[in-house]
Amino acid sequence: MGYRVAVVGATGNVGREMLQILAERNFPADDVVALASARSAGKQTSFGERSTLKVQDLAKFDFKGIDIVLSSPGAKVSAEHSPRAAKAGAVVIDNTSYWRMDPDVPLVVPEVNARAIAGYKARGIIANPNCSTIQMVTALKPIHEAAVIKRVVVATYQSTSGAGKEAMDELLNQTKSFFVNQTLEPSKFTKNIAFNVIPHIDVFMDDGSTKEEWKMVVETKKILDPKIKVHATCVRVPTFVGHAEAVNLELEQPLDETEARRVLAAQPGVLVVDRREPGGYVTPQEVTGQDGVFVSRVRVDPTIDNGLSLWIVSDNLRKGAALNAVQIAEELIRSYI
Ligand SMILES: NC(=O)c1ccc[n+]([C@@H]2O[C@H](COP(=O)([O-])OP(=O)(O)OC[C@H]3O[C@@H](n4cnc5c(N)ncnc54)[C@H](OP(=O)(O)O)[C@@H]3O)[C@@H](O)[C@H]2O)c1
Image (cartoon, rainbow, N blue to C red; front, side, top):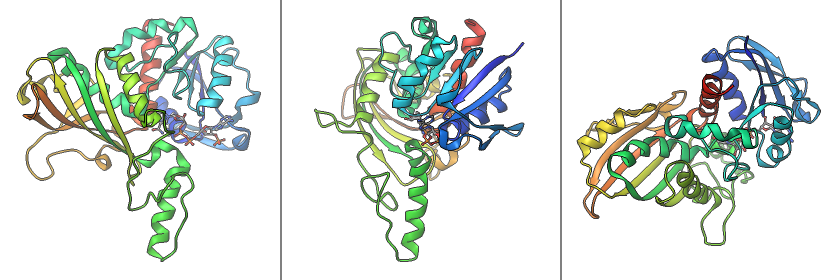
């Protein structure tokens, strides 16, 4: 017998990808329900190539009988509805930022800390990390095991899809306007995103960091090791899908490039593409639609003791969000429910 699965935020960037991945990976579901706001109730959304689903209003939906909820409707909505679904007996895998740092909610990247899933019973909720954190910790895990990471300095190059479907539309429409000599004022972003880069994602914190940067710090500690120091600068760039990260590491022990490439290539979920020639590295466009976390430009940083630099790229809607959530669901049914 299969499971009953509900996808919350099913009309959004992440929710649509979740439905696509559930279908692609033949997730053992007898029934899949698509939920979104009242605005979308009655609309159709596709369940991969298999069928279309009629979207239902989350606010009116009764979760009784649902086994697993994959949720991505934004933090405020999740704060209200994820506990409601858990109370009705479902295990909720939540993509929003709302539950990630709750000590009673595991924060999971299956290739890194799958065993943390066991903690789901406290609240019935498992959190999916932020997209930038997922791809970084997946690549850092084998390096940490091999040489112990002391400090991470990361600059991100994050695509507009990370800010939702309307943000992607803003990039497209601003780009088109530019070519017909019109201006389209920013609405989802604070400044023009077309032909520009913006060093600001999510709200500002008291210490001058943005919340996106703070998330990379605290989530890396929660998932990988509380002792690792992280300093992040998160930047929105005018791409549609795929986040890239320039990562500089200070390690406790030396790790040369050959050994670093070897341990990275052996890590589940990581692919190393690192030829020292023009084009011998991966870019966001090339990873769109792919499942892996790609690592290029592996090189020793001689300016510090045991320094190593990496370029990490992944599809933020897949491994950075929907795929990671479905992998958690797969692990959950394999080992727990
Ligand atoms: N995009 C990423 O890379 C990424 C990665 C990790 C986590 N996340 C998180 O996932 C969440 C969704 O991101 P997204 O990119 O998919 O955003 P999106 O494209 O803007 O989609 C938002 C989804 O939430 C639904 N929704 C909004 N308000 C709702 C309400 N009151 N009740 C029920 N459903 C509601 C929307 O339904 P309607 O269409 O009916 O409005 C839509 O399905 C966010 O919390 C985001 O931080 C995103």
